[in-house]
Length: 49
Image (tube, rainbow, N blue to C red):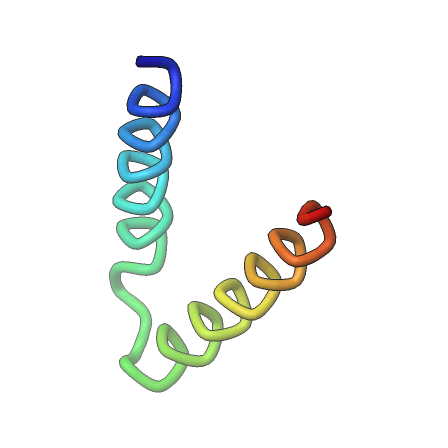
């Protein structure tokens, strides 16, 4: 059950992060979100065995 809770919390965090970019132009929003996705992928890759 713990993994499902972590997943749901992650989904809520994504919603919060996306909302923090409201009000920016589409290009600016897309640029920063793509950078965050790349950073996320890097960190996930670093954590894998």
